Image (cartoon, rainbow, N blue to C red; front, side, top):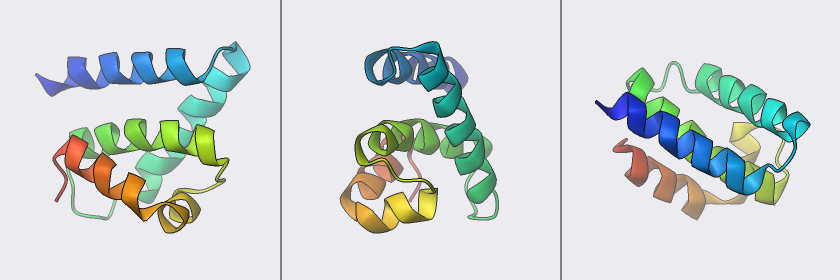
Length: 88
């Protein structure tokens, strides 16, 4: 049930924050990298997908190269994305 929500959220974030196809590919790659980086953090794939989708918007704004760098630079965004995804 949440998977369509994830897809909708991802589409909205990418359309809002990434006007070009190259940026869309970059966002998709960043999300894959985020999913890999969070694989052993004890959250479901669905929660990680929502978290990573949320964080990709932050990465576009902050220009961070990695999830760890982004989380360190903006802990409040990471907290908000965890809450949005239901990841506690």
